[in-house]
Amino acid sequence: MKGACLCGAVEFEVAGQLPNLYHCYCSLCQKQTGGSHNTATLVDEANFNWLKGQDAITSYQKGTGFSAHYCQNCGCPAPNTLDATGKYWIPAGLLEGPVTSQVVLHMHLDSRPPWQTIPTHGHQFATMPSLATIIKLLQA
Image 1 (tube, rainbow, N blue to C red):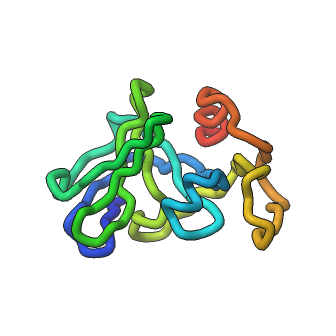
Image 2 (cartoon, one colour):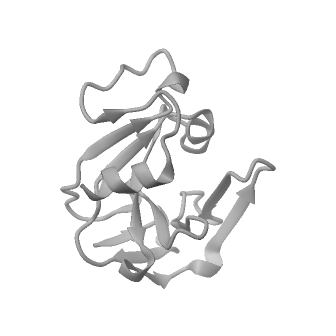
Image 3 (cartoon, rainbow, N blue to C red):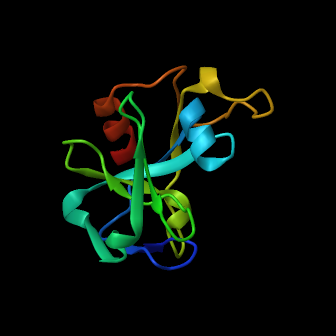
């Protein structure tokens, strides 16, 4: 499956079956997306390939360690490696074609804005579960 930013400067592809998706409602994801949550997945580095545009990606890192990677031309979030996990973080909105993966995880529900309804499906966490739990749920 291929993915790209809004202007097309950044392109990538994911091989194999796409893992399930998660929604993160933390305040940082709200600011990064301008919405109530971020929808994303994690894929193995071996299944991720840049097609073009790595040089068009800029990043910002907070003192807490949170980082945001985005296309310097259009501002879309961009895939990036997730620490030393062997995984790439993939913003689901960049994926092109039919995505059949399901949202199976909702995290940081304590931070969700009051206008966002509580989801009725998937695993729900008031804060952030462990990375091992996230990976396990996305692979299920």
